[in-house]
Structures are given as structure tokens and as C-alpha cells.
Amino acid sequence: MSGSTVVILAGGSGTRMRSTVPKLAHDLCGQPLLAWSVNAALAAFTDSRPVVVVPPGDVYAGVIPEGVAVAVQPQPRGTADAVACAAAQIDRDATVIVMSGDVPLVDPELLADLANTHESAAAAATMVTVSLVDPSGYGRVVRDADGAFVRVVETKAAGDASPAELEIREVNAGIYAFAGGALLDALEQVGADNAQRERYLPDVLTVLLGQGETVATHAATDPAIVLGVNDRRDLATVAAHAQQRIQAAHMLAGVTIVQPASTTIDVAVAIGPDTVIEPCAQLRGRTVVGSHCTIGPHSTLIDATLRDRVSVVHSHVVGAECSDGASVGPFAYLRPGTLLREGAKAGTFVEVKNSDIGAGAKIPHLSYVGDADVGEQTNLGAGSITANYDGTSKHRTTIGARVHGGVDTSFVAPVTVGDDAWTAAGSVVTSDVPPGALAVARARQRNVERYSERRGE
Image (cartoon, rainbow, N blue to C red; front, top):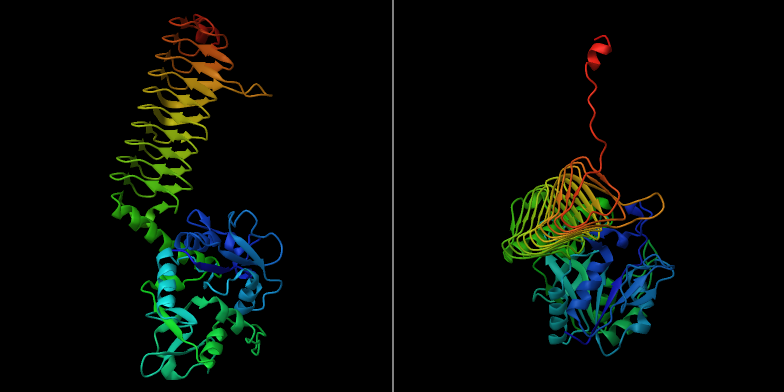
């Protein structure tokens, strides 16, 4: 949808987070809190440029994406004042959506539906409402006998609302649509005659009603849209709801999540159908998982790429790529820059970093391979090590195809092992090995006869 401007309020100080990190920069399922509102606006109104109202300074540098406008609220003087700070970027002839950056579970569909309701009603303002089982703390929506909107009654202090008004379950969700010109004109008439000496956006509705303008409402069905984040308890509550949404979408798309309550999946993660996510798995960042994969218990994937039919068992994969049919673990650690090609294996207690492991190659157990290129169908025995650092610089190891590495072999880089070569168990390989050769790089064994007898034992 196009033709609307979204103003996102992000000027609060967030002191209740008890953090040196600005509130809206805190992570929610893989992206900053503020990004949830921004992304919803960008998805709902593809031709519009959202405006984020921020406090002075660069507290949200790197959090607000390119293509998003910024307005500064010099002092935290209320929500109406915050919108007024964005007045220069509000089109009088456009529909203006106003929402809070700390209420992240508002989805693009709701914003688009709100704009449609507003424009269909030819209203000066339209407010999103939602009915709650427990509306405590929220402003109640008061209607007349015909069901028309009359006012919002706040309930934060005793005596603000009558007993009858407190029984109302329909509340103000804090998301609005305005006719641009009506909003700008009404903002000029909103004062700060309250205990906090702040200008509040709901007062715009009162001004518009007093002028005989139409104020409409749009009922939302998901109570989670009113969940705001003021402290870390709120953040945990919102994260639980976000996880339910994220995981439900994946399950409806054909992914099996064995135990959703113990599973964490970030919002940008992509998963193919018929993949199974087992208990206590974490899929974070921009991880991409193909189809027919198995992500075993207690596995963590961060910015990882897994093609189809990949198995990861009780392992940690960060910034690595696993091609079709690759297997990882248990207890493996794939670090950034690692590529397991088709059918390759990094087995038990194996660590791989910045290495290309060829198709069908196997590093079965108890090994470290860093800064290496390993050819197809090569098998590195238990305890294989690439000694890639000389104290000053990193060096690369090249191991050819179909190499048979003996157990406890150390490859001291830079070194090249040719195709079809062998290494004897316990070797420390410091020179290149020709193709098809056997490298024996260890001291010859010598047995001292009657050693215990000589010691007097």
C-alpha cells in the first residue's frame, strides 16, 4: 500500500531498562526493538518513508536503517510534542499513521487495514482498539448509545474513571491514523495542562471531536499489539509472544519443531519444509536452513547456511556453510569461513575455521582444522591438527583429494599434501608430501630393555 506516512515515536529515555544500551536498541528475536516497528511500516507502505522521532544525539546510529527519515525531539514533553517535532515531514494531504517504537508486535497487515478503515470512513482520526480480558492500566474506550466513539478515559490514577468505565474491556492500543492536515492543525491546540506538564496525543482526538470532525475506530483481534516494553520483564514477555508468532509461521510452512517452548528462532531465519528442529535448539541471526535437515538437541546456528539434508547434532555453527548431505557433530564447532561441501563430515569434538572441506571428506573426531583446503574423499584421522599460526601470521594448509591422514598428525603450515597421499600416525608434517606418498615424520621407536629392573622396581 502507498500514500501514507508512518511516524514512529522513539524519543523516550528508557531508564527502567537499567542499561547503557538505549531501550529500542535492545535485541528482540534477532533485531533491535525499533526495527520491528520500522520494518512493519516499510512492509505496509512500500512507497512511503517512515519518520522516526528520536532524542538528541546519535543513540540510534546504526539501528535506524537507510531510507528512514529522522526527527529530533529536544525534550521528552509527551507524545503530541513528539509528533509535532516531525511536522516538517508530514504531508497535509496524506494519511499519517502514528505508533510507538516500544510496542513491537504491530504487524504490517494491521497498519494497512487501519489506513483502509480510516480512508473509507473519511475520518479526521482513527484509533486502533482491542478488547482485553484484563484491561487494567489501559485507557478505556467510551462509546455512546449508538456505539460511536466519545472519548478515551485514562485509568492510571484513582478517580480517573468511574466504576462503570472501569468495567469497559475495550482499550486504546496507542496506534492512530490521521488526516495529515487535521493532525497538524489539532496539534497546535493541544496543551500541557496536566501533572506531568506534557502534551499527549490522545488529546488530539478530543480537539477533533470538539470541531465536529469524525473520529473512527479500528478493532484489532490480537491483544499482543498493546504489549509495550518498559523494562526487561516486558522484553521477556514480548519475546515469548514473538517466538510464538515466528515458530507458528514456520510450522505452518512445513517445519517440525519438536518442543517449541525450548526452541529459539530469530525473526530473519529461513527454514525449508520437512526440516526437524529438536528440543533446545537455537537458530539465530540470518541463518538459512534448507529442507529435510535435522537440527539436533542443544545445537546453535548463528548466521549459518545449511543446504538440504544436513544433520547438525549437539553442535555450534557460526558463519559457516554446509552443503547438501553434510553432517556436523556431536560436539562440533564450525567457525566463520567454513564450507563443508556435499556429503562432508565434521564429527565429534571437531573444530573447523576458515576452511574448505571437500565433497565426501571426513574429519571424524578430536581434530582442529583451521585455514585449510581439504580435497574430496579425504579422511583425516583422530587428533589431526593444522598448525596455522607461527606466532606472527596465519598460514594455509592444502590437503589434496583422497588423502589418508593417520591419527595424531600435525600439519605445520604452510604445507601441501598431494592427492592420494598418506601420513603415518603421530607424524608432524613440516614439508610438502608428493601425491601418492607416505609421510612418516616422527622419531623412530627405541625400546630400553629391562628398564624397570634397572630402576630397582
